[in-house]
Figure (cartoon, rainbow, N blue to C red):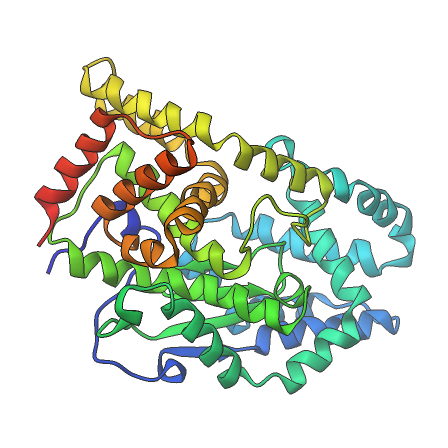
Length: 374
């Protein structure tokens, strides 16, 4: 069976199997996070990690698995983890630590030359909440959290996910920057980000990532053919993040983007408010491509440029508008079906008197979607 949308298969790889329990699908490994927290406890007591300690940490399951999923610069990543740790715990680096900490509220991803400040932010917050995080990990009922998160994720899948199950997925607790990510057939949850706002928020965040793992088999049940198109790439990314964000963001604009600072919050919310202009831009780019003004490469490049924050901001705008104007059922039926997604968005936009896609753009999506369906 061919998969639907090569662009989505680059995000997550899934298969369809008979229904099984969430605990049989999602297996949790907290050992890497525990190793890091142990190093942090020792450092707080005056004993800094040795080279052997760092080698053991980076050879632990989460860090080891990470680099089977990504093509990041491994040395740079490990240096960021170590350097951030040393900056936070080494008394001789207190001035540097305080300097970076004072700038965290004003960090802007678009102008950042190094990711080190984010790693410092994580290390500093871990230090400030060390006993809390250690206690949470020690008492965490992973089966309960996974089961509750799974139910939340499935609530936003057509037919509550009946007949759809991802292949076995490992959930790794890790310490790195300020993100939790779905990578391949694994979830990587940064301890500080995950536990920052408490266990309920953590469960909702996990549900968000789990929803991504159900999206591919939903597409596979609707479509028989792969589709490569710039507008489709844009819509799939916005559908993917917009729907999942209902689970852990709920309302936009946000009052907090913790653990990111105020500058990132302002940029994020401003991009959300600018969504109508982004939608108009992808509409025009697509029509220019249909008119022969852009070749395929130019079309994809420009379309990719319209995907902001991996689809979160404009995706939230589109999906939340559908929810607020047409109801949550309209969101659920849109998951994995581009025809319903574009039509429900346009209906919601018309009702709210917001930006509505042009007939030509809409017809282009319908033409591609219809031809690829089962």
